[in-house]
Image (cartoon, rainbow, N blue to C red; front, top):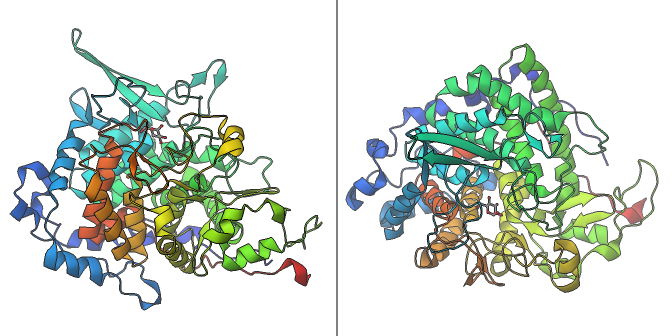
Length: 555
Ligand code: GLC
């Protein structure tokens, strides 16, 4: 296997402002008249006829990546231009989203996870989760309401500054909370914040993804508003550095991927994703690239920028080479020799071909591929994880060819991955003995439920974004149609159960905020694909993929 090519990312000295770095030039986004000036007004105030004004605009996403001359953009633009009627669900969704807003001393600071009055068990669904707020934040940004996002970014930054302890153990300075809550005392008329860094979370799981989402959201805010003053404050610069120093410190690692415990991200229970889960690697990569576009070139910043560039380089090489699985690669692994010693080893992680699960041979289409769940010594988790693959496309962690191959796979395996409700969080489910061992007999994660093959409507926004980026908006439209046939009627559930995602999840909350916000974001992006720039990064042309396949029997 070739070593990583030098000169991948652009020179450190030439990495500069967010608008120079990214695919969607901010200045151009701002030049164009906004979708409609009334954006500052809430959707509920607007009449349906007003809503359709300006829809179908697509004058500003010509830069969107559309490889191989595919001109998939014709679809949303022309179809919305000719036939878009705001779906009645949109108004309901906005109303429900607004009901979930949390205020701190009169200021909106986030949205709670679920406003489910019918559920007896509140658990921690009355908190503002960092990851759950991301689709809400994007919806508000797309609707021209950035204040709540700014307040959220500042509040969570302030919480990062707290001294964090679990029992007698002090957590890393940069850790961001999984969630926070505002306690209102009506008598004293005071508001107090409480944050959870994992100490109260079920199973004391570490929210590794929170810091990454925070950085990604800071970039989205900056891209959307053009307000660089927030990300340039010493506080935000320090916040980014603290988050990244948790991940960029030297240790015993032999890989550039980030080693994590189970439950460290959206899948916040034991699901056998410990090690190097794809979700974290994709978010890590995207956060690194986002930080790179926002970090100042002062003394402290410069040192970080250098470390970031080196890590991005190594990480993209590692992911594109070792996490990628397609028909050819599967066939190669199937024929791997084992027990190879030295740097000439082809089977670098000593994966025993017998450990390849049967299902993957049927699942793998002739055309298509994906990043597998995890790669570590003698262990490849072949499961498909939706979030990690969609974020990999958005961050351009995948090569352009790999991005298209992922979309090919989604199309080819539509029934398995989408079924009747977009989108399966993971595929396939773990059953029987394996379920006992892997989940620790978790009654919430039974087969085809919750994190174990359940279908999560929130993932619709990521799928839509990935579809737009790869020039396949028609896939997103199909998925949105499915969601529209059920979501409102079912009361915006958190997740669906079953092989086809047909049943409202056994313990699913209703009025789950990120199901609502995810739907709105998907709709708004399809109507105005220029929004994609907030959460997408263009392929770095200099970061060439090194994907040489050699087969074990040839050496
Ligand atoms: C569940 C999900 C987690 C989410 C939380 C609040 O625990 O697994 O990802 O943040 O609910 O909605």
